[in-house]
Amino acid sequence: MVDDILETGGTLAKFYDECRKLGAKELIVLVTHGTLHSGISRIQKKYSKLYLTNTVQQKEVNVDITNLILETILKK
Image (tube, rainbow, N blue to C red; front, side, top):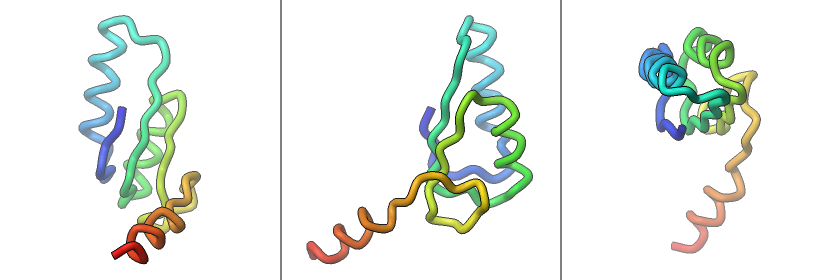
């Protein structure tokens, strides 16, 4: 699953529950902006893996997109 914003984690939690009902055994999520620590924690407990970019400074960040942003800006 890919999501742009993770605040409370409600949307991703519902998605997870529905996928599990349909038989999914492992779910991985990539989030661009993780804004609330409580939501990040909620999703980490459910999903097998959370990939979180560094667009918002959080201790759980594990994907650095700094170079991608700089390269994009410098091309213009």
